[in-house]
Image (cartoon, rainbow, N blue to C red):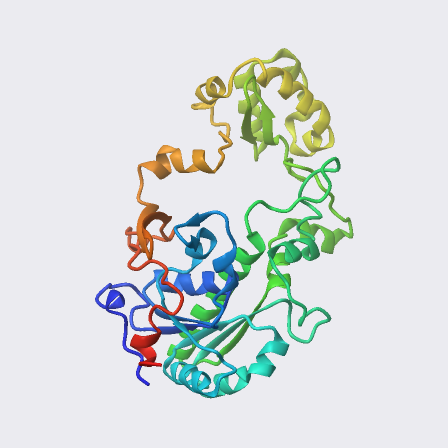
Length: 386
């Protein structure tokens, strides 16, 4: 069976045009990986089982009959339905693998063995194969089903998120899946470069647990180097002060003072006698040690004016600061509202607004060429009549 390129992916001038990627993954991390390369021009075919990707049912909210969760990570691919337990469907998918430059899948190891995924992989040894797994293969939890929330909990991320009063708190977006999807995309692109340059590297694994732990960055390194277990500090930074929200007369404002010079500018701008008298706070280490006292003074000062007034006051101060938006506010800010980050894409229920890729190529942001497809919408055109 041939793999004809989707006309929407021909003549784009995008860097991955002509590359064929088969998406056997479900839910978020794997589909995000496939969407990233699709945004950059790759021709992607998504294979779903007869019941469809479970993320199709993760609603509300919906746009028409589509869960917006599905719409978020499934553009730029055609869609076929195939049951890998059915020999005829397995053979059809195997033919796609033979033509593919890359494959993304996220079967549990036990599922992969039961379905014969190794036979698919062996059908094209030159294909770059990316497996998104719960945890590194061979480990104690490598074959246990895992999801974003479980990864946030097991990784330690919830151990540094929230406060002592709130207890463990998850990040409000599926950051574990997103980080893992980004690592999977890096793996796929690395494998394609390695293949093009004759270097080894065809099989990659992007484990959800370890990818999420990598997002701990400084918190992890602090523990590994000193043995000190970091706790929950809420919105405050464990190593920098003042670096977090401050209360104003009508809400909140974010102050992100990263250097001693910036702190000096903050003191000058606020012109508060008590704050100015604290000459011992000229160093960040001293401010971190006495954060509670510093926050008390800042709260007293900042609650004297509204957020809008402080934004005006600090605008030319050289003090890093900014508003704290909700999602609607983030999309309404001029940087986003007046730019091209938000575009439109087609769905089976009409057009909807959607975020385009954040990447720019030679100063140009790639357009959304095709929106998410319905379940099995391209099965007949790619596989032929049932």
